[in-house]
Image (spheres, rainbow, N blue to C red):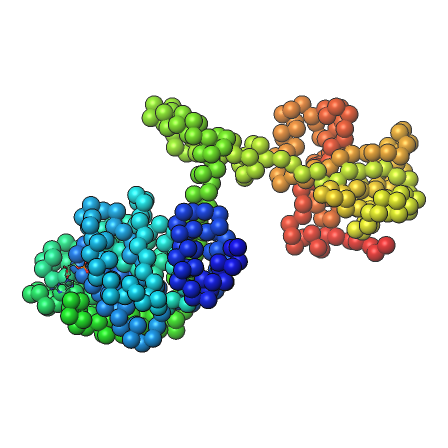
Amino acid sequence: MTQGLASSVAAGDPLALARAISLVEEGSERGEEIVAALFPRTGRASVIGITGPPGAGKSSLVNRLVALYRSRGRALGVIAVDPSSAFSGGALLGDRIRMQQHALDPAVFIRSMATRGQSGGLSRATRDVVDLMDASGRDPILIETVGVGQDEVDVVRVADTVLVVLTPGQGDDIQAIKAGLLEIADVFVINKADHPGADRLAGDLQGMLSLGERAGWTPPIVRTVATEGGGVEDLAAAAERHARFLRDGGDLAARRRAGLSSRFLEILRDRLLARIVAADPGQEELSACAARLEARQTDPYTAAREILERLPGLEGGTARACALDHLGIAVRRIEDRLALYRDVLGLAPAGIEEVRGQGVRLAMFPAGRTRIELLEPLTEESPIARFLESRGEGIHHICFEVEDLAGMVDRFRQAGAAPAGAPGAPGAEGSRIAFIHPRGTGGVLIELRQRAPAKAKREGRRRRPE
Ligand SMILES: Nc1nc2c(ncn2[C@@H]2O[C@H](COP(=O)(O)OP(=O)(O)OP(=O)(O)O)[C@@H](O)[C@H]2O)c(=O)[nH]1
Ligand SMILES: [Mg+2]
């Protein structure tokens, strides 16, 4: 079902594209599956962001650009991010009317997206929608968003090329324009150039650009009259020059990489938070934290650490489980027990090695998620020799894999269980090991094993073929 929809999107079917977009907007699992299925086909379209103050003429320009690209035979995607700001409420209707001439053209796919009260204007879904449009062969993809808040920064993360639309006479000088808008521009558009003051605005922008050191690309200033279509060809040409500059200079890869990693981290942050809110510790715990913060009984760092520590399976969490690495069995001669472990149980020995420091020769047999270790004494003084003497063959120890050997030994000490021998001795496969005396563990000799770092492991291993 998902595959079918994904292939229809990939084939360029507008109905399938609309359906897939709805699924990602709902945040549904199927939406994620479709993005996953189509992701290898993405990264091909040019993504152009159009931002600027409310009413600057962004939608009128998008409309003109769409007509221009259509005349060149391109299939397009247009995303109009609904302004969440009260400044531009009602603009959507105007956008729809302006776009109507393209509404019946299947090669122009227009989608309005609500920002859903998020502080960032472009939601996670917007990035997904760009991917879906890209995978369906739309190129370029135009994103219109009003540049009043954090929105414009979000546009930059999605778009390859950012057009900042300004109008003459708005604040009368560029001091009044949001600084963030000036910084993200790859191309400046002076729209409504039919109004007085266009020269002055161009001069001011020119002056500002000559002050700043910009490596490689200086944003050109293009004048347009969107209502008449004036300057739109120049604008498209400037956008294409910038796209070429990005491609040839390698900046495109860097920009896309930054965008992808911020998108990935955003998802990770959202999911982690959702997990905290949904499960243990839970919403109640979070509210309790907020109350304690307000009363100055805790600080934000401590509160965050406490919450994280209660999340199972996370680094820093106390609930982290140790994996059983192997079960150690003392035998007089490894070869005498191969019949049992290899032939009867069907376990394949992964190798036989000598650990001289421990006075043993050992064979490891992977068994499901854990392993069986047969231990044969090399010398009379080996602990295995003494074990065999007093108890005969049998289970000798169990071994847990740990990430911090010294830390775990300390935890045992605090629990009243002392190490047997010096902790940190070299063990099999280049590992470091420690033993905890059975006196403190209810009769079980516990081995703790910290795996060798990936590289050292290969060198430290002295495996002998069977
Ligand atoms: N005189 C003149 N009017 C223009 C020009 N471009 C747009 N307009 C008018 O300006 C108004 C706003 O245009 P839009 O294209 O909706 O502007 P916008 O930036 O998309 O507006 P929001 O999405 O609400 O922020 C409309 O009445 C347009 O007809 C232009 O170049 N010259
Ligand atoms: Mg608009």
